[in-house]
Length: 415
Image (cartoon, rainbow, N blue to C red; front, top):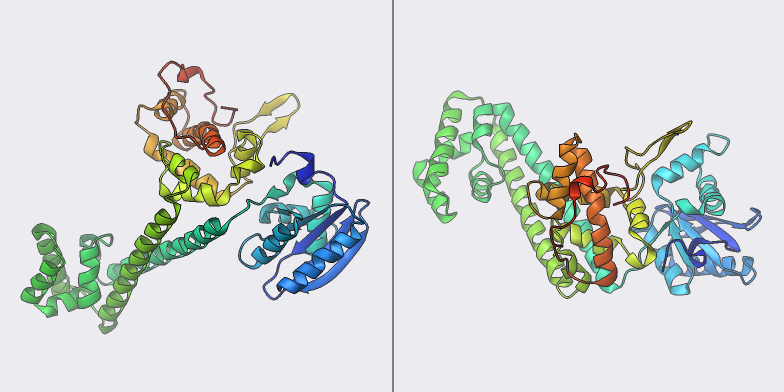
């Protein structure tokens, strides 16, 4: 369904703003004239949410209600699901838009009730800032949960690696430089033996035996041993260092193993999804970006790639002074996670000879900096992504007939 159609976020008889909280929610309902007709607290329980929706339907007097939440996932997901089940229109007001809307209302107090009223009045007066929420079936919900856990595991692994780097740097920068914390066998050695002192104390025979089981190559194996022995001899190694190194290395290995398992699970679940398979045929789109697009975007809500670009934060942000209009900067609104994935995945297209690689070259030749050229490529590719998600057809590289050097060199014009 189109996000622009009047039956989606057009006029409604009731606008119900819900400020989602951990312990409870607060709901404010406004009629078409802006009068408050619903004002109450509700528990995050199915029965209470259903009772609120029935109250809203009664207050709407037979008309339609639009429910708007400030969080659509986690603690806000029950409200969204019950609205879907009851056939009630539901939308999402992003945090940044919520903050800007609050600044327009008098007073500085921040309460659940005030926030709920701000959400409702924003929906009443500025429906265009309310974003659609993609509908999700059991597969989509499962993949979304797994993707959230994957993101958590990635953050966990990154934090543990950074901490291990810090521990090694504090004792001996030379040893830290010799360690490759992306290497599974080196992490396994550290998880069993510890840092420089632990590796040296284990002895060369035990160290080599362990490396043999881990199938480490001879050159890096010997380099790590020599660095550890030199560090143990000349460096400063408090007793706690080995314990920390073992713990952090084990945590990284566990997080990496969980990430691999989750990625395999997600790929297995999406293997039969036609949209996912078609997206993987687009240059630069890998499993991570394809998964995000499938789980976050209901393409039926957008009547064109311009609308999808606005949702993803790739639409132009016009700056006008008098008769001068500048569209050279990108919008700071939209889905930040999708925006970052779509832009940075274009790095793999630099230097290629497909349509997007050639377009990057054309942008760069006109003096665009790297990041701005990536945004240009991301916006151009989004038009292809939209068509592929809409029609569920694989990508095919067009013949080299278009003059990309003269086709919209600005990254934020319509491509």
